[in-house]
Amino acid sequence: MTYTKTLGAALLASVATVTAASACETTFRSSDTHPEGYPTVAAVEEMGRLLEERTDGRLCVEVFHSAQLGEEKDTIEQTQFGVIDMNRVSLGPFNNIIEETQVPSLPYIFRSTDHMHKVMDGPVGQQILDAFSDHDLVGLAFYDGGSRSFYNSEKPIASIDDLAGMKFRVMQSDMFVDMVDALGANATPMPYGEVYSSIQTGVIDGAENNWPSYDSSGHFEVAKYYTLDQHLIVPEVLVMAKSTFDGLSAEDQEIVRQAARDSVPVMRELWAAREAESEARVREAGVEVISDIDKTPFIEAMGPVYDKYVTSAVLQQIVADIQATE
Ligand code: GTR
Image (cartoon, rainbow, N blue to C red; front, side, top):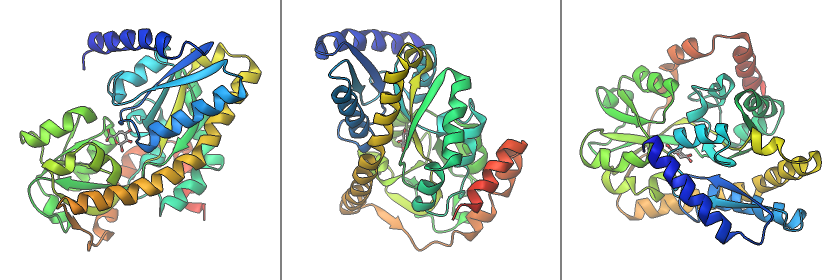
């Protein structure tokens, strides 16, 4: 989407806010690429409900789902400018902007979702949330993004060799381009909203994502081979524009932070249910799932990615802290 179109959409949306949320004194506009009912959308709505309740209706949130305000990379910029108040995004598109976000986005860095929760709920998570403040943003909370695996329209992929020469879409992060290169395939970074038609027209062979996104985006309709290699467990993040946050009293800032934190357990429950539901739905629709796969060669191929990105002492320390978290 062009900047002008995005801005047009943002302006239209702000008109909508005035009508829809006139009962509230201040309504924060929050962006999400996912459709209504998706766990991230529902979680931010829950955060808004808590906020409204705890401020007697002074502060509210309206979630603009389905990429109404634009694709993630553009909406991140708009949030930095304060045009959008809040944004729920994957950490992936932050990789090129905020160095610290690269570490929890590294392939195979987390051993499991439980491990990811322990890390992101602890000091490492806080360190990464704090890193947003140097970039005109306030990091509020982390949400689940499941594990991401490759899917494609061409053939069942059962080993790393099967990936050779294939073309996959990745999120707009240089690190993910290098990750796919290291696996012997080719990567095309592109906005989420362009993936369906790009697979359909053969511009790319496939992409990679978690069960709920593979399902809700409809990508399973055009790419029916899903290989459970689970190369990424990338947390999602809820951020606020620093200019919006700075305009609040200290007391309201804490209410905002707490409401975001309190939406996390709700999100985790919705996520777990949705993962199971989506997996069942796509299997039912005839997707061929390749689950009997040796992940060791995939993990071993990631050495060059770690070497290229984990260079500073700060990032090395975060990697060590994550690995040491039981
Ligand atoms: C989803 C994630 C989105 C977006 C999307 C993508 O899993 O929830 O925020 O990043 O992946 O691949 O672009």
